Image (cartoon, rainbow, N blue to C red; front, side, top):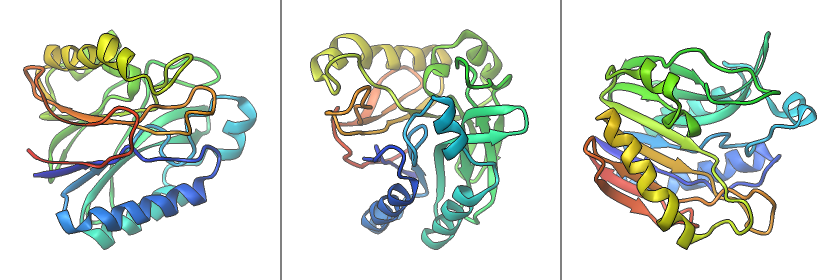
Length: 239
């Protein structure tokens, strides 16, 4: 299986422009013929948490954004996993959607390790797909004990979409190497499953800017491949 992790460089609160940018990036990597393309948490809006932003930018699943991504998945014959702000009857979620190469929504995961005003998911869902038995752990769910216990060895592959930033300077390559890079690898090793980890990239001049980069971690916690911290460089890898 060939995977492509895209640390999408996005403009917060501009979903139409970000989807167009994704379409351009997808065309760029199409020559590699990826089976699966992974995008970050809140891939087309940025990670927004103010109630007025959630009211404006969150969408139902299925909805306009899932339909747009499904069209691209069909056109490029690849599955796509992406994070988005979900609007549901009971509230708002940071969710992730897996759309298969036929354009079908195969899996929806709601983030469990969240704070108000978000609602929270209560389980880790697993789906049998053409790319394997798949689960999604959104950002902090990789370290959340409830999420980890719910996963409990049921998947062959996990996708970890992030919208991770540092306080102060972000990106910060030194801090990434000192504090977080190995922590992600160790968390994966305790789950014993291959992980595809991809972060959003935002303008570092903005507060709480996500710092980009991506990596693929083996079930033993070995970092098999990575794209540079602070960049939107695509990571292509054959699993």
